[in-house]
Length: 264
Image (cartoon, rainbow, N blue to C red; front, side):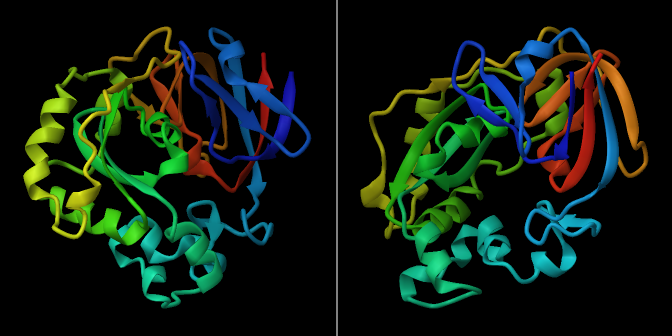
C-alpha cells in the first residue's frame, strides 16, 4: 500500500482502543490496521497548509509569511487569555475570531505524563485529550468564550503544570491520579469571573491507546535531518507513531510536510 500527500494531524475516533486515521487529498489510512507492519516515510517537499507553496514550514504547518498573517495562527491560539473577540476587538480577522472565540470552551485536567491544565473548545472534547496522549482527563470549567477559559488556565497554572513530558508519555511512565480530587482542590483558585462555570459532577474520562509495546527510550524522527525512514510500527499515542526501535514520529509536529508513505 502506497500513499502520498501533505501531513495533517491524525483524525481519531473514540474506541477501545482509539482509532487513528491519516487523511490525504484522495485517500486515507486507518493506522491501527498497519500495527506490527513495516512503514516507510519519505519526505518529498513542503506544502504550507494555508498557501500550498513549497516553502519551509515555520510553525503549525504554515510557512513564515502565512504564520504571521492568517487569523488561525494568532497569539490567542496558544494563549487563550489574549482573546479579544468578546470585546468586539479584532486581532487579525474579527469574523473568524468571533466564530472560534465566542463558543463554549472547556478548562480541563489531563494526565499524559503528569497532571496538566489546558483549554480547548467544547467541540474538541475528547479529541484534544487524545491528541495529548492523556490516558485520563476531566473537565473543570465550561465557559461561554475563550477569554474566560484562558484567564482560568493562567490562574490554575500557579498550582498545577501546563506542559506534557512527551518522553514520559511515550514510554508510558505514568501513574493514575484522582482527578476528581484535583478538580475539587483547584476550585478555590478559579477566578471570580469564571467560578459560576465550575463543573462539579462529571466523572473522569479514560482513554485506551493502540500500543502493542512501549519503548524504554525514545528518539524523535526529524524529516529535515533524516528524510527517509522505515520501521515496524508498534503503537500510536497522542499524535505520535511509535516504532520498534524506539523511533517516534510526531505527525502533528510535521504538518505541512508532503511525504510518501508505504506499508511494506
